[in-house]
Image 1 (cartoon, rainbow, N blue to C red):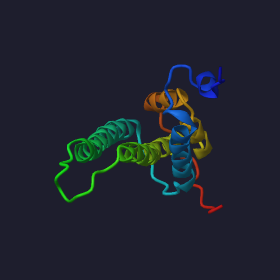
Image 2: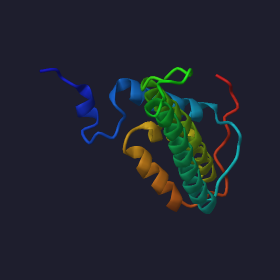
Image 3: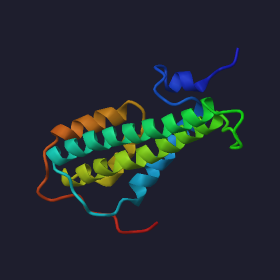
Length: 156
């Protein structure tokens, strides 16, 4: 019997399949947090609307991309001169969409943290499973601060 560490870390199956899938979500989100230096702020209402619109937009984009790739893979005419796509394209597209969506969703979190007067380094908690949902939800109710958190200006 093989010991699978992913069942210890993630007993509910929240993480994508395997360490590669987890890395494809963790690293882009950490890069998105590290690279955010705009100084933008989001109040609670704008933050909530932004999260909803970004989630709907990413859902529509992902559905469209995966539908088109699925159509090209599974409805390929063998008589055509266009080569058939392999099903691994679906996995690749899904992982790239996951990486892209983690960067897109982490930006408003940082802007809301800054507005609440909380330092950006607390956003790294949002890359952990289950804690991300708690942090996104908690910032909806956390009041704005009169003095925003400072913007990181160093490159490294």
